[in-house]
Length: 320
Image (cartoon, rainbow, N blue to C red; front, side, top):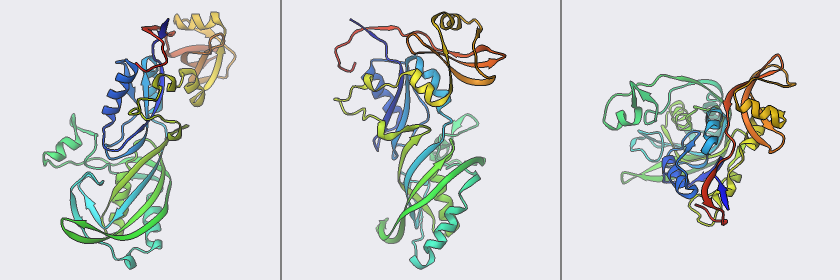
């Protein structure tokens, strides 16, 4: 029996120590599919939720990239690094006197990073400067000056604190580890939040742990481990129509209207005017036909989604 080619959004729980591009490579192998993209990367040291798009569902990724994110993290006060995280090289080991970083002082520094803020991204980042990645320039010793960007941090809370010592280049340094949870807009660097509260406290700081737990309505609790060969990766794909329902208003089409929209025609529908996207879903097979705008009761295609195709393989319950 011919199998339907993989098509959908895959929630992946990225392990520590591998790049997001490596995760995409594993997904291509597991699904037997070249056309796989992602909706935003995680640093190698970070773990947690990555959203991958397989097949035609890669067209949905542009609408997933801008969703808000939730992270849990551990900020270490007392040591700064050149990357603002544990993968970097220490640039200052100032140490921390517990009396100088009271809980009240920490809260003031954290509170200053809540709300709508102007944030300078971490120097070791993937942002392009004159067509080159900032991290490539920084690793070559070139000066990197990044512009601030406006981001929104709707939640930044300290959930735990540990005062202890660590070894830095053979010296024992007093540090404070803060466990935090962050809800933020796309484009926010949690590493930069750590850097900036360290600067405000005069201690220096960097991230020693980072985990993305949610992207918009998608939660890491529903994600799969791609390195687990027992996982049915194809079965874990979320259908395009089900993804669209979580993100957009829906207009339902009968078979004739669905075909007309697929053919590029403007279709009449009872729906309030909307610049879009609105998800147009076929009633007969519950298929995402397209993302549309609505003007005066007529639908106009923003993005079309093709009908499912066969992959040329047989279904046997196993991953490709």
